[in-house]
Structure formats: C-alpha cells, structure tokens
Length: 152
Length: 159
Image (cartoon, rainbow over all chains, first blue to last red; front, top):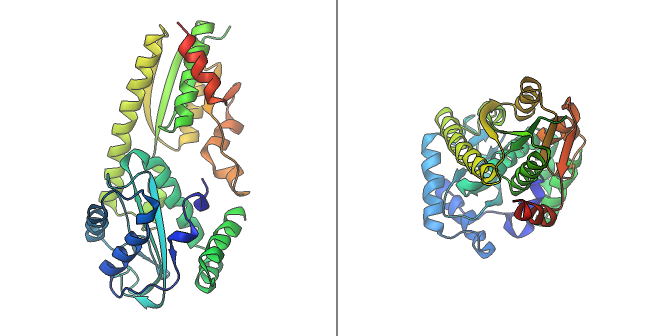
C-alpha cells in the first residue's frame, strides 16, 4: 500500500481559503471533483459531517483526518489541505489544526481504506514528517515528502 | 500426497484470482479446499488507539467487514462447488498473518495459496506487511498466484 498511489499533487491545497471546519471539508471535496470519482458531492460531505458528529477527527499534533465510507465515491479518494494560520477543528487536544486530510471510500473498498489510514497515521506520528509537510512549498514537494518517508 | 489446500481471501481482485487458482489446484490434486477470510481487527485497534476512529465507528467497520467476509466466502464456496471441489470456509478475526498461519497449523495444510505480493514501499514492510509475514512465516509450501489472464483461462476451462 503506497500513500502516493492515492495522494496526488492536484488534490493538494497549499493554502486553504476556508475558515471553518465545514468550509474546509467543502473546499477539499470540491478539488476532488475533477477526479470523476465523486459522484455526489453533497452526499459525500453529509457522510463526512455525520462522522464528525461522533467526535472530532482533529486527532492532535495539529492534524485532522475527516473521513467516512460513502456510496457517493468510487474507490478511495484523498485530498490534502494546509492552513498555516491554524483552523479550529474542535481537536481532541484543543489546538488548532494545520494539516487536514480528507478521505472517503466506497464501502466495497474498506480494506484499502483501513490500510491507508493506518499507514498515514504511522507517518503523522513522526514529528519530523509533520515539520517537513508544513514547510513543503508546493504540491509536488508534499508528494516527495510522503514518498521519502514511505521508503524509510 | 496433497490433501489440504488453504487460500486466504480478502476481497481484493488478487485474492479472488488466488481463490480461482486454488480451486483449480484442489480439483487436479483431488484435495480439500479451505478458504479463510480474516477480519483485520488489529488495524481497527491501531486506528482506535491513534484516535482516528471512535469506538462506535470501529465496531461498525468490524460489522461491515464481517458481512463482506461472509458474502465473499459464500461466493468462493459456490465457485468451488461449481467445479465439484469440496470446500470449507471460515471467518476469523485478529491479525491476518497470525490467523492464516494458525489455520495452516490447525488444518494440517499442505499448500497455502495467496495473491500476489505488492511491491515493498519501505523496509518496515518486510516486517509489518501482512502478506509478507504470511509468505515468510508459513510452515508449508506457499503458492503465490500471478498472471490473472492465465488463471482466468485455466479456471474457465476446468470442468
């Protein structure tokens, strides 16, 4: 399982414009539309927000991973957004978040989705990885950082 | 004499091809085919621990994987029976590699069939990738199935 098989430069936003959790999820869902894998954006967002209501996916270390399975997508879709000033995500540790990964999967692909989340979680536990992610200057650099740490 | 063949299925297209090949092997060798699907509760536990999942969510995924596993196992059983291969299915839960190895030992498996291994992306994959672990730890001969087109033809022609 390679994260870079799913995380593409065209689905990375280096400077999110949105100011709230709902707006960020909407902004990231929108950049996935050209992939053709999102069949119903509103339903996609609805599932993500329903999951958020169970508890924030702001998992600490200034990272949030909003996610959900939904029939509204084909396979596994991933978008990344960075917010340098920080965003209130009602995180578990109370801090604002800078790095947001939006994920959704068709329920038929749960296995891949779980492996992706586990691999992403492992990388995000690495302080150095998060620092390099924060300082990357382009979507291509973001992908290179992931590739570098995937190999290590 | 080869009496017992085990194939591990996961829902991936590779594992379905492995199942088809295992059915062909069992047919030719007149062996019994065992099919196992393991609900990967290890990864659910890891995601719960890392706080990406909440408890209710992890349990819901476990139920979904359980349902998917049952459907998949029944599908493979029907495929085997359509080729007149005696087949026994089992749904397990835990660490995928540990459970598959347990089945190999408990059932006195002669050949383990598995889907093609993915390319390693990191050094840690050697130790942590479930497929790699099965391949390295299995106490019996392991057949790793490649060439989907060839297997499809073989399976189709098997009467």
